Length: 203
Image (tube, rainbow, N blue to C red; front, side):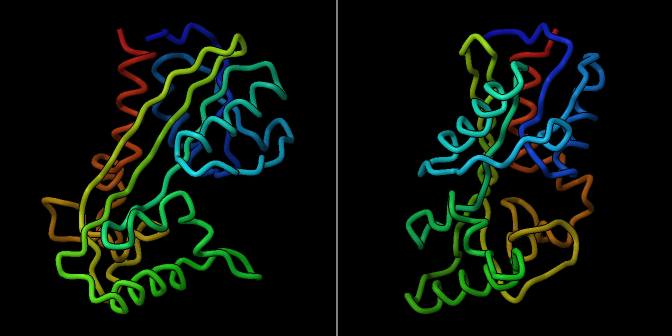
């Protein structure tokens, strides 16, 4: 495991929420964090069929464009009865001509489960893969997974994406009903970031 010794790190995202979260987590280590938007970088095409493959595409593109070490993530939800779908295509299921509509995506997912008569509990897991890439080609990979079940109808207005129909294992509330701080403490991304910090930034 390679320790991160640099002073600057590019978070390969245009998502302001992800950037703020990573900036706060890395603040104790004195790392200056920037994003794709700060460098005018476009979003590369995510053409892989795995979370790690797409995270690698984003991290490597950012390193190649700036010469800075870069951290990228790819995440989504895998539904057991749908053979792991939507998985890496989670955001695609929400795409509409007017932008992303996750109510549409959640409805489609539940309707698919109803169509095939999937038994309860309808198990699913949120997955997050982080790739930290250095300019010399070295990479470290960290993964986080939060198992749970899908519920219907949607519950809660917190969070984003599939949160209103995802009830994490060991909890009665959906991610959509949870206090954001609690969700961020137990989420798939939190687990992946914890592994990253322990592996590359820890004492």
